[in-house]
Image (cartoon, rainbow, N blue to C red; front, side, top):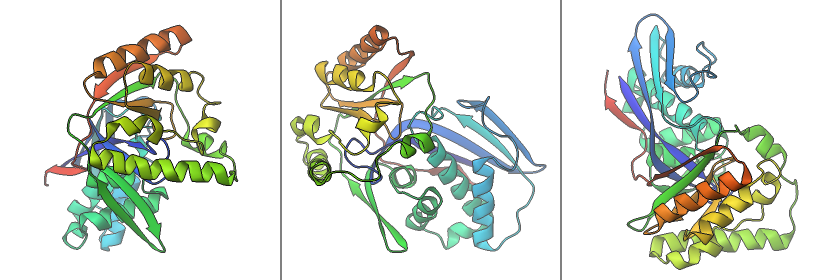
Length: 299
């Protein structure tokens, strides 16, 4: 069987741990019955484990355990287009694709709807910002309500382009979380609450002129800028080139800008800024996608 799962960008500036967007960059997982084997091509092929510690293998096993079924011999083929450890949801993609494949193969999918699949993924990750768009697609706002997870769609205007600058340097989610302050001033909390609300409304209403202010953040990006030299300059270059808004993608180090007609200029502006800063990497333009994980060939 074959499963596809999109990249995701979390936070979108002020929406720390609660906002995320699915992007048109896909990992593909094929799972077949047979002797255990993990084959990986593309992004992360040199770093990802090929034994039972692989995150996809672990989540397939978790799905079988949830179904109360024994795990048969399975071989895994991973074709990865999502950059690893760059803030584009590679871990969430592994979790969601593994759960979707395991649910299909074990029969768990017969009693597990997509919302429940999202909840399983969020339980594993501990937050919904990547898990929701990876599972459900589109732009999503997610929260934890007691022992359950809730995610709702944020409608996106037509023509939005996501321009990404992806540094060659890797990021560590654990390090990017550890560097954050334990407490923040009330004024900064209010700053982010207002901008997160404005961001959701600006996207849903198509008032893109508000995105410059609506994608600002004081909770995580200031601390993380110490990990990623050039982050603020890349954001500024994107805005100067005509982006509606720009921010750190997830825990970084990738920077993402939202643009429309001027997306080529935004891409060129980010590339030029990176050259001037001496930040090695690549810039790409992609689009949000409204579909999440897909079982494209059932086994």
